Image 1 (cartoon, rainbow, N blue to C red):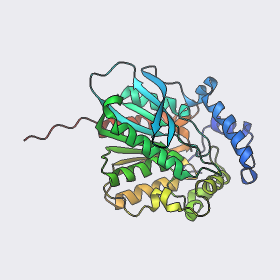
Image 2: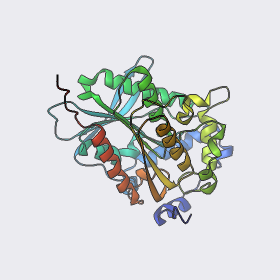
Image 3: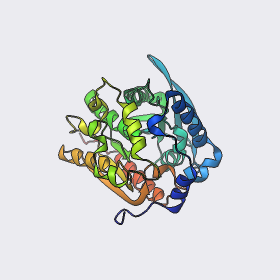
Image 4: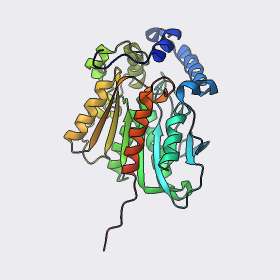
Length: 328
């Protein structure tokens, strides 16, 4: 822990005060009740003392998308001052896997929308459960990206300036969306992956950071075991939701991989950035000593969140800048 430093005292106290369920013995009903209670807490106004207050320069609203086979909610962040021209689009995916809501990311999503400026569409994807594998969330992320880009004029976005942004399990969803976008010929300008979970194969728990930070304040190996078991049920292909195990990572949008160092999945983020570079895809790694998993949703407790926000905003601004027209 010397090289990575301990997480902030507030994070350690928060973990000490909260009662964790027995993840290995959790029944489907108990998981559902835990998820509902946790998401109510994450959406509560008082929680913003930890998760951060939204940027007042942004407007936030829920919107429902009608897809061919389902309805899906998205949380939309727009600059409060109307733009005179189409804005860049950022499709965001929150973390949590079997818990989580776009609301927990209001701080970062609203700031990015106001600062660039851009339209941020955060996907309220299906949460994994004994009946819902991670593949469903991957489909949700990709379908929202396609839907919004395909109706760019109505959304007021520029389809030539699009990026994806995912956190934790949402990092896997965003990374898979980037791969699908390349394969479908949908050009992306960038991808931001924050403490991403990129490997859901049987090797998911074998990384050194899993051992070093097995009982870290915001994510434990016990939680990861449950996540992997639910995300990839028996009979499904773990490589289909594991960006790290994708066969071809060339030709993807440039990536910024944000890695907190007190995190069991730190090595998964590093490994994915390495594979991107090996394939010729530009990838920056931004490491944050002392920061725990999910720190970007805890600016009230983790000062490194503001540094990460600055790096993310700068990267997206550069990637989504208007490019000069080619001379004829």
